[in-house]
Image (cartoon, rainbow, N blue to C red; front, top):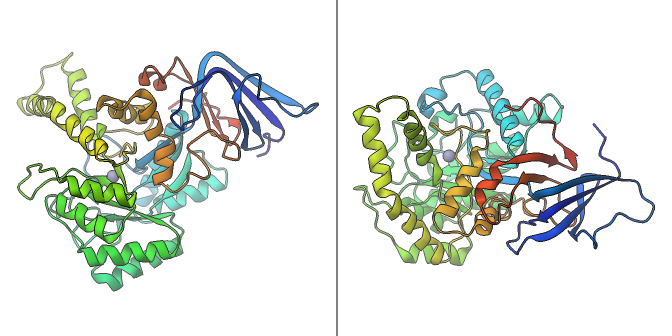
Length: 422
Ligand SMILES: [Zn+2]
């Protein structure tokens, strides 16, 4: 590779460092090799006297950290097919799809992803191909296969466990294969043989899995679609709760502030996947411009829209009770595709539930990096971190939609060639 030795100086109308403070007007980022060396005002940031430096000047643009999507499924197709069907495809096809998605997401400004579950070794094979220079993509934080109960959500990816002994064994097997964290499905989900309104693992099983993962210095993220499952996950010591709405077995939502307080106290992150369902609604609303929606389609649009304000208020309440919400798209699950500028829609959803644009940006940069345990490397523009940089037109600290106006993406100090944008 090479080509990134020496200094690069990025100057821009404003620099957002990802820590949530006001943007630095007329700011600059100095890069040495693949690392950020300094960030500050244009006057204060310069290369060492006499050193050759390559300048990149973005007169009217904004520079910010490369985005960190805290929840993807790289093997997904995003055409509405359920995981049950997706996983009937051979590993070779799924690995190629993962390569396509990884490239597309990188081009959209996402320089790190946490993949929350794939079939067999597909994502690990993608990583190997990327390390060989066969294909490009964001930095990968991989779960490999999620750990599920027999018949439980995502069991079709290839790993199930029963009891604490098998839970620990599953973690050890995944660690042996080179995963970066453990994904566990603490409740059912969309998987047809699972029950989304019920917990799956017991608290003791989750505790064994989390304990074993922590022993190896890796974190645990738990899929949770109901209150009892969240409670098991929180008591069991997981580090990130995914989805996380307080559903009762009958489907009703009964918010439990004490559970949120416990999450806040223990520093457990919440990835609410707000846009996942809305993406399909947007697609249907777009379709409605050219054809009549079926009764069923119209009903799902109406139902979603009538619930939106209640849902937004729900997430705002969770936040005000001290839980840190992090942005993770959950694409390409169901209808939500990776690439384009799809992760930006989840960040926008965070602003739509009441975050300021800057808070929403932090949820998709610094805080998603923290919840993925890669904050020492990425997520903010600070001296010593990876030079993963996104350049956009406009000012996303005023209007978060400006994140869609991708101008350039730097990965490890190099401009990503996006000429074949997909
Ligand atoms: Zn997911």
